[in-house]
Length: 293
Image 1 (cartoon, rainbow, N blue to C red):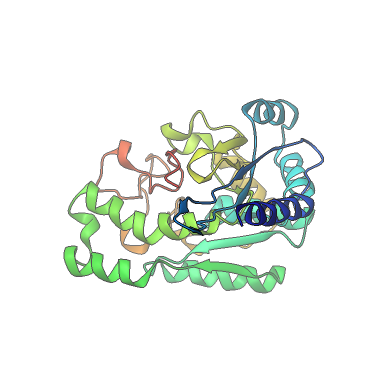
Image 2 (image 1 turned 45 degrees about the horizontal axis):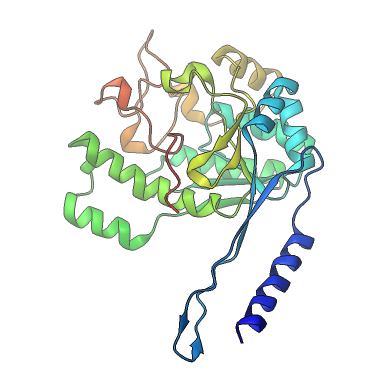
């Protein structure tokens, strides 16, 4: 019986290998997670877990960052090598308007997703509809787990985030990070609108990164070297639709109760969680963390 079971799972593994996405730029390191369980008396009980994970080595990441220098080159490589197992995460800020337009000029079938936390401003929903119609695209909308939100609000209140950094991070974790984790578990890579000048935490970010917190998938930051002036110039030059909150003093856009317009001379992310000190101003989506799987 044991031999039959092992042959069966070997057959599955070979089928997965034959249907695995081939990336022509590199030969990636494919890892098989294989667990058949234990013998118990006269019965052979199986506890199976088979997972083929496409992983990149650090040398491959270094090679990509050395050879690819522009946003367009990066997105073309992503289209050629990762599509359709790659998607752009969007909060519909100015950076997202730029990256989305560049992506769709390269590949009209690129995928996009957003996190609807349940606390977004109306202007964000409005631009989402505008972009759907303009580009004739589907935007995958992710929602937090209803019970997690209900339990959190019941225990800590609707506006818990104002009370402590810990509460605010908990809210971000439940409303943003958890649904994001589920989405990224289905992908080989994801695309962001990160820029180095946004925060000190992002100063060392490269165009291509290993996302260790999500199984070693690829994280692509095509406009990482862009300045805020370049973003604004690109939007004007190409007459791109953008979130109307930008004209109201919101260069960085998040949930409605956690975002305010900035004052003249303030950092562009000063309006995010403005009641907190600067070192805390990340929601957790772009914080490097260990894989908990």
